[in-house]
Image (cartoon, rainbow, N blue to C red; front, side):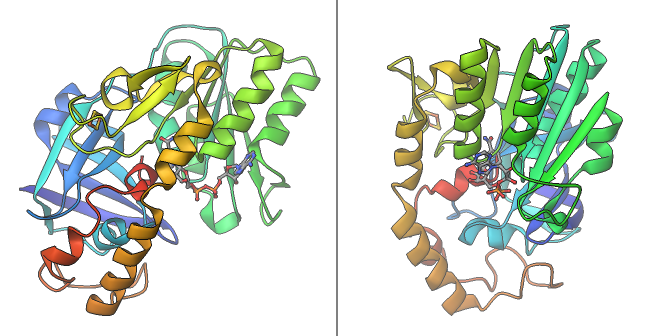
Length: 311
Ligand code: NAD
Ligand code: FES
């Protein structure tokens, strides 16, 4: 069992967990992830490691309530436990002194971009970060990103905080004013990563994206996380999750992530009907599978696109 040391909402529906996981904390490198299960029959979900503290033997993860399992996870609190946490998985981010790097975090993707931004800064890069969210409430890790950036630009879709627009508007402005950019790292919704890739391809700016396909075993055996890179199949769990954005087939990724949407929705409806969970953010003392529906309800979707949503 992996104990939750601390858990707190960063924004509505987005919760950070600090987990006791000493072995993973010792080995983790930026860009890597874990696959966790809340209880025996539960779904496996991949989640990027936001931070680790080898001295204290802890890792932190950030989870967005998107489907049944993530709602269940986000109802847990400090003192609760997860059945298993496997990792660190995936290849670490490539960290070197590239020069000027633009790190883009879209929504909850900011939590995944953060450790790599911090490592790039430590490696001597000039880091310009762009953080985008739908509204002011959903802007996460602002102070953390500011601390590892030479410049932090923020956009909100509705203009409720700093500047109205998408992250790509800020990237375009940087390009248009002639900022020399050696590398772009983008983590967020697929449409965002595709839009970034389309923009930087024209400018010949090397761009890396962190992909979030469906995952099951995380070992390259099941094929669940297959992505098309230059028309060749690769597995995000072992060959990624970071890939050269200009070589990624985003259309196929979108199609594959949408494959389980109906089943996932059904599963979520069943979950709500059975368990009537409290609203996200509302405190609860319920634990794991005890009162949140039966294992059968959970096995309804063996994999789901929400698995990707946490990463
Ligand atoms: P969101 O939909 O709120 O979007 C976040 C930001 O992305 C927006 O504020 C905007 O600036 C930008 N964006 C969105 N659509 C865009 C477009 N068409 N063009 C340009 N920019 C655009 O994001 P969210 O709800 O916080 O994140 C959820 C999504 O992020 C999920 O789909 C999840 O799968 C994905 N995600 C991916 C990873 C990963 O590893 N790649 C990690 C976490 C989350
Ligand atoms: Fe099974 Fe990657 S998750 S091959």
